[in-house]
Image 1 (cartoon, rainbow, N blue to C red):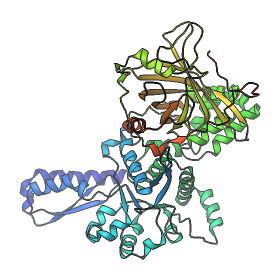
Image 2: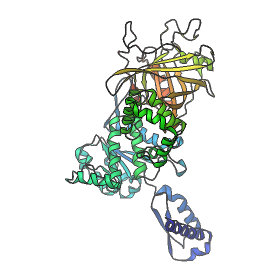
Image 3: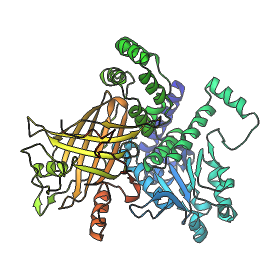
Length: 560
C-alpha cells in the first residue's frame, strides 16, 4: 500500500507539472492521466495540444466516462408485486424502479453514503425501447449502459430473441460484476451472478466448495452471502428493502461505500473489543439474560435476522419482551454502545406540515388537539376540535409506509395531555403482535411529545426495550371533520444503528374514509410531499381487534 501511494503521488506530481508548464506542451510525447474514484477511466492526451483543451478534458472526464452505479432492465408491461391503494390496481416495475432510483440518489442527503463524491447514478431502461430506438443502444453508447450492478426484472423469454439483447449481453451484462433478477424467465435468471458466485451453476461439487469457502472465508463466500441477502430482500416485497438491496450490491461491487450496509456487514462477527466492552461493563445483566429462557430466545432470534431486516429484528423483540432483555439492551447498546453503532434521524424528505386548519392558521395547540383527535379524555378535560362521538383512542391506523413499524394489526393511537402538567403531551401506540409462536399479544409504548420549530412539527422520544428512539413527526394534512389525517415521521435508534422513515393514514375506525376525488387528491398530495406514493403503503389488519364486553384479551387502552 505504501508503494502504491508513492506511485500515485508521483503521477500526480507529473500531471501538476504538465498543467503548469506550457512550454512542455511543444513535445510530441503522450501521457495517460488516471482518474480514480475506483473507476479506471483514462484519457490519452498529446502534449502538443493546448493547455485549455487538456484542462477541459480533465474537468469533463468524470461526466463523459462515468458509468452507472445501477442499471435496471425491465419491460414496459411487467407488473410488480406493489398495488395502488385503496383500489389495488397494478404498479409496473418500470415505475417502481424509477422510484427506487430516485431514493438511492437522495439518500446521500441522509448520510447513507458520501455525497461529496457525487450522487449515485442509476438508470432504468425498458427493453422495448431498445427495439424501437436501436440508435440509442449501439456500440456508440456502451458507456451510457455500462454498470457494475445490473437488475433484471420482469423479463420474459421473448427478450432474449432480439438482436439488441445479444448486443447487450456481450457488451454490458457480461462485463457487470453483479446481476440480480426477479420475476424473469429461467434463461434470464441463469445470468445471475454475484462477483465470483454463480448461484445457478448447479455444480456437483458445490456443497464441497461451500464448506471450503466458509472455512477459509473466501471472497466467494462473501459473494454467496450477498446472494442469500438478495434472495431474502426480494421476498420481503417492500420498497425500502429493495432500496437496501441496491445499496448492498452497490457497496459490494460498485464504487461507493454505503454506511448502512457497512454497519450491518461489519457486525456479522463480534470483535474482541466488543466482547471486552460487554464483559467488562455488563457481565451481571448478561448472566441474568442467559439464565432467562425468553431473553436467550430473543438473542438467538435476532442473530438469525439477515441484512438490514428491521422487520425480523422488531418481530423478534416484540415476541420476546422481558425485563431481562430490556436490561441487556440498555447496558450493552444504550449505555455503553459496545457495538459501536450510530444512526441519525433522516433529514430528507423534509416535508412541511400543514399550515392551516379549518380556515385558520395552525397553532401548536391546534396541532396537539389534532393528534388527540377522537379520544375520550378525563373528566373535566375537553378537546375543542372533536365532536360528540368520542372513542377510547385518538386514531386507528388504516395504512403505513414502514414495513417494520407501521404494519402491525389493530394499531390504536392514544395522544393525551399529562394530568398534572397539561402542557406535556404523551403518545401511546397500542398494537397487536402475532408472535413467532402464533400467539396474539398486545404491546404498548410510551412516547414523550415535544413541540418543534413550526406548528405541526413535533419531536418524539421513547425507550423501547432498553434502546432510546428519537423521531421527528409532522402532521401533513387533516380533514376539517377529523375523518382522516396523514402523519409523517423520521426516526433513529442510534445505539441500535438503525434509522427509518414512515407515514400513516389514520381514521377514527381504521377503515378508509369515503374516497371522494377531493379526499383522494388531498391524501395523495400530502404523501407526495414526503416523496411517498400510495402504492408504497401497507394496509393494516383491523379486524378482530377486541375490546368488546367480556373480551378475555382486551387491548391495554386507557390514559396513564
